[in-house]
Image 1 (tube, rainbow, N blue to C red):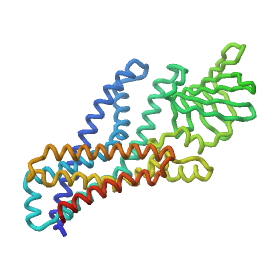
Image 2 (image 1 turned 60 degrees about the vertical axis):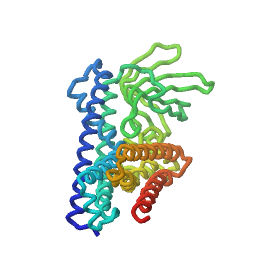
Image 3 (image 1 turned 120 degrees about the vertical axis):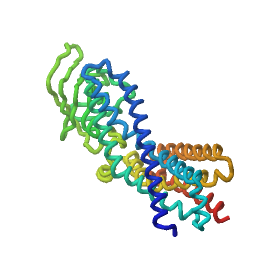
Image 4 (image 1 turned 135 degrees about the vertical axis):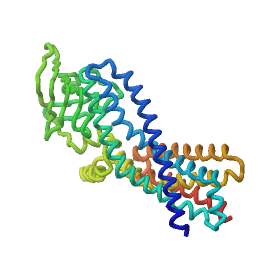
Length: 362
């Protein structure tokens, strides 16, 4: 087994390089997001430089979380390349240490990196995304009562008041709060009886509570009321599954939401897919490390650094495309979520192990 001191050295090198990658990506995403955001919100009342910087800082962790597999890949490649260029790997291998031994501390670092993403980064990213969406909604509130096709999905409910279609510009609080909401009541003959536009709509037990309502009825003048109620038979668990974004739910809340929705017979494919993707993240980063090792350990000797590094980047990108495609199938229920989450991990691990066995053990 590799010596403790040497293993610590490789482990620290990997963590240091990973930290620099994260810091660089954070700064780059922050600058790009702040610039793009300023062009969209600078004309709205209430927007300021300090608020814009806060919004960008809250949004960056979510973007950073999505880049974690690539960070792990590039960190492992950079670590091995730097060790190779200083002939530290050459000396290590000449001393009889196999590739499996000196890759072990780097794989441990990748696994811990994945765990810290789940435990620390994911809750920060989810809560930050929810907070920034609430701030954006406040800035845009009342800008227009038109609900676009790109906004929250429309809901249809039927109560003793008749059939009502519910839409909103934005969804907050895991789907239990609607911003710039629209409630359209339809009669038995299919004609619209009433439309209510509300600045906010809160799902309560058996009804929607509307605030700052603008009411339109056929043949009558529009009227404004401070509060109104619309009966509903929709349960909070159903609304959460239909409207809440899985990415905006912290990891430690996913299991409870999935079990509750299953108990009521609701589909949980999207939430289950996100949950299993997070659980599979640490092994995925280890697989990414093995892929990095296949293209980074021997490039000095072969003299093909550029080609091999490009091959590693393409392999990582291909794995990302496959993961995204399979994840879409899992969210739609075409493939079981647990299979969709772990299939890319198994494929990447088998590829890396097979290549290393071929190169190291013949």
